[in-house]
Image (cartoon, rainbow, N blue to C red):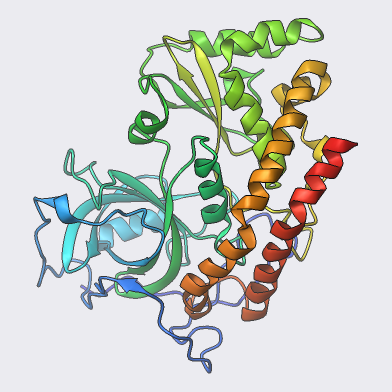
Length: 426
């Protein structure tokens, strides 16, 4: 059976589009006259066979003890997906439902389930979609390099393809619950799909790492501009408590105003992490977030403590970059006093004691950001993935745009601590 057809189409600029454009796909790459050096690839498994051809299939390793960690961010994993014609057609029609696939790495294979993910970053399977890989849906308790489920993000809004890696790493180092990441070069039915960011989902394993009680409810904003004050727009990601009673109480408390606000919400929040969440969004200019743009957030409830934690996700639009409005980073969402769209954030800014705590925490993060030396991290990641980014036949940005964004990120990290201190001192 022949492999599903590849894709050929015109390059489209991001411009004012609110969805990632289809990329020009050419196996020689958009700059095929250039010959970038080979990145560090772990396990070459680009298997030249069509869907349904099982020749050379290797059974999964029953003993993964010596397997490396999928979230080792010092290498680029070489992964392959094989999707049968029926599954390919289903992904082409809709993409939101899981289909069976085979995941390959290091001459071994795992039966997995796959579907397309994303909202504004949505791309069809023929282009370069972000993907959800569920490792244990077909085979219960199966793992792939220690992961039961993981995401492959196409980074279609990020010329550097390192924003999520930088941001999540800082969050984790500063002891805030955040995903692990790494990088992967992906082939799908033997076609080169280029470089992806591997991202850890907020599943039970993640909750067990960060919370004493991993058996609570996890919610995500289903719609844009969905706030905790309207629980009808919250989507359940994990429902182990059997009801939404705690969310209803939290929504009622969040609607409080004036002096009563803190009295109502503080007992229901992990207060320290709440202040951290607001301060972190300000520090790295995570404008596509709860407090600035009322988007890309989750709420986790610990049932016994009856505490809520505000979690962040989709951190590909950080450091003041908004591709449909500005050509470079460090320009959008820089005004700290505008991080008040989310009702909890607005109420904190309007409450003297909460605002004082927020300012103090921002100053702490200004110091931490300086110590972290983000510019050096950018250079290290450039050394790891730069050639792979430029060799990606399905990438969204030119060499010049990548280079400009790397320089812009270095400048952001050099200047942001002083900007934070100036705001706090004002």
